[in-house]
Image 1 (cartoon, rainbow, N blue to C red):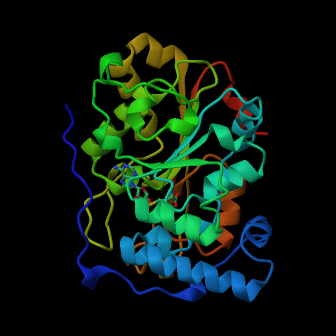
Image 2: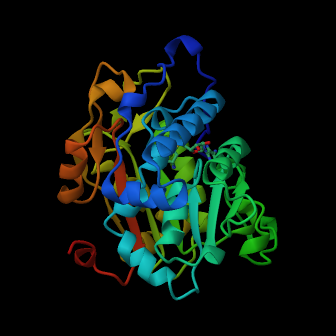
Length: 327
Ligand SMILES: C[S@@+](CC[C@H](N)C(=O)[O-])C[C@H]1O[C@@H](n2cnc3c(N)ncnc32)[C@H](O)[C@@H]1O
């Protein structure tokens, strides 16, 4: 059984101070935030900065410092249009694991995925509350947000240890989602952990997936050209997968959870490493690299001033062809 090592509490001396100048918004992000928060740019900026301060005080993730909570990166994943289209039928379940303030799922719903089929899960209630304060929607938001720790999902996860699923609006924990999720997103989550813990995490993700063609896991995490330890500017122990090791990880996971035949014939995994980031954002001495599936996005990101490396993944139970993902 892979050993699970959780995140450590950070020594304040290694935490870089906040810097407003890092904030950049694309046209799409600005349009979304104008409609969701405020049409006034000054007011919008001050609300973003205020939300950032509150969240960073809870846990100083570099992605919060880099304003990723308003960067809507999920919607830029090449498989996003397919996920959205399939979700519109109203028969799927979507989850964002490690949703933080929940901007990605709010954007998903704004794009037409039915809110009643969308779940946002995070370890920390404070981030979910911060999202409700930022979007001013605690009374009106139809997305089901809940706190749960992915490592509390047992492995193996038998039907007996699952809690009854009584509808998306009733979900209070991941234990209710055994083999239930059609569309599974994780952003900047795997790279928080060492190699064994990432494997343990992937096993748990696999147990929550619906065994059905069209089920998709997608995301973005820091990666390296050769898999190995990430040189972390905050002294965390973190592992970076490579475009080669990432598919092997998932093959091993599905061989274990299902069978070698299943992993071979029913699972497709893709990961591509993209350009590095600007060092200023994370205050690191080394430039981080990103793994992502498509060059177009890499080019866009290279132009913008982004903070950490990303591994993007698409894990797709057949029948879609990989070539379908690249228009
Ligand atoms: C680095 S942030 C990434 C936030 C967002 N997904 C993004 O792409 O920018 C990682 C998020 O995962 C959450 N998280 C960390 N460990 C978790 C766990 N064991 N179970 C569920 N969520 C977890 C954190 O609280 C945090 O909100």
